[in-house]
Structures are given as C-alpha cells and as structure tokens.
Length: 259
Image 1 (cartoon, rainbow, N blue to C red):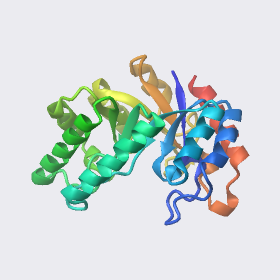
Image 2: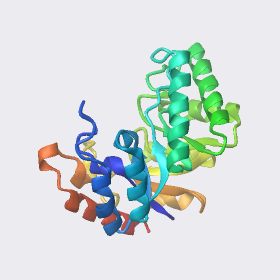
Image 3: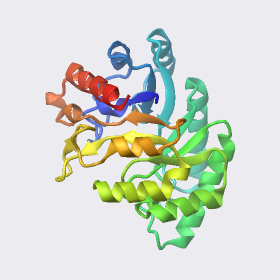
Image 4: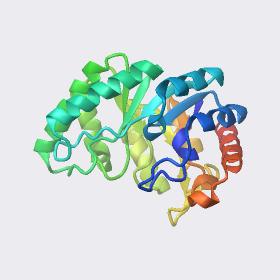
C-alpha cells in the first residue's frame, strides 16, 4: 500500500484563523528526508508562489497526488456563480500541479432531511466531476456533513454513478464498532483512506494504540486503495510547541506500522 503524507499534519495553525504558519516550500525537503515521496496537500499551503512550489516539489522528488480542497458545495453558503468561478480556479490549480485526485467535504452542514439542498449538492458534484473528468473526486466521510449518515452518502454516490466519484474513508464516529459498521456499508465505494486514530476521550492516538482497528480495516480493502497519514499525535499542539522533526519522525514510524 502506498502511504501519502498529508501536509496538514505539519501545520499546527490548521484550525486557527491563521491556517498556515510556514511556507510549504520550507516543508518539502524535510518531508523528502523523512522518506515520503507522495503527498496530499492541504489547499491553504498552495497560497503562495505556485511556480516556486512546483519547482520545489520536483527538486525534492515529491509527487502531489491529492489536493485536499475546501471548495464549499453547500448551496446555502455558496451561490451558483461563486461555485462556478471557484471551480475554474480549482481546475487550473489541479492542472498546474498535476494532481490526480481531489478531496472534498460532502455537503458540509447540509441536513440529511434537506432533500432540496441534497439535490443541488449532487448537481454540483456532477458538474465538478464532468469539468474535472480526468481527476478522481473523493468525497471524504467526515463528520458534520452528509457522510454522518453512512448509508445516505452511499446512496448519493451510487445515484450519481460517475466513474470518477468515490469515497475517501475515515471514521465519522471514533469507536471500533461504528468504524467497522461504516466500513461494511461503504467498502465497495472506498478509493482512498485517511489514517488517524483517537483515544476513547477523542484525543489523538497512534494508529496502533487508538480505538480504531486499522489493521482489520485495511485488510478489508482492495489492493488498489491507498492511504494518507492525515494526523499524528506529535503534531497536535499549539504553534509555539510544534516540532517539525518530531512530527515527521512519528509520521515515518506510523507509515512503517501501516506497511
């Protein structure tokens, strides 16, 4: 199994208004030195000199495989014209960097009972998938979205019936039973996996020690499914406490455990 590193794991400002605390080009050489060669890139990390970033990726032998985007597909929060304009910017970014896949939240803040909003969400996914016909569109099973209902998101993807639309699996509820039940429902649509784990109190844990049985989950998936290390415990800290070398060392250990 190929293991990607998500650059969000190296960004302690990820959940703050600041979003980014250091330039992506300053992270790439240390990432390569830690043994990673494929990346999922946190979209705010690309808000810099695109040519410089691309040159640094090439120089360090790193392949940008997945763009982890925050394009909002909720029709209550983004107008059709805003969506269309942002889609074109996204398409240009994907082409410029050569991303193979696009990660999106599936209808963030859309209620499962709001059939009108779901229909508009599906129309936007359809338009996006057609515009990006050579790109895999991965709808992440993230909480706070339509993926909170494990069967609903399956029904949506099956009804769309588009060859380049599938699921990116992560547990929506961090308990072993829930994660395995979700897997059983969604397994046939899973094309990628986000690896992270939690303790019973929801603090971050290593893949080996947390409540999610990753060994069992990965054994159930087809051989073509790859995975991304999304977070490691060492990286979950305030900006002033973040240590890049320690976080990358733990990421390398986690990747070896998965292999």
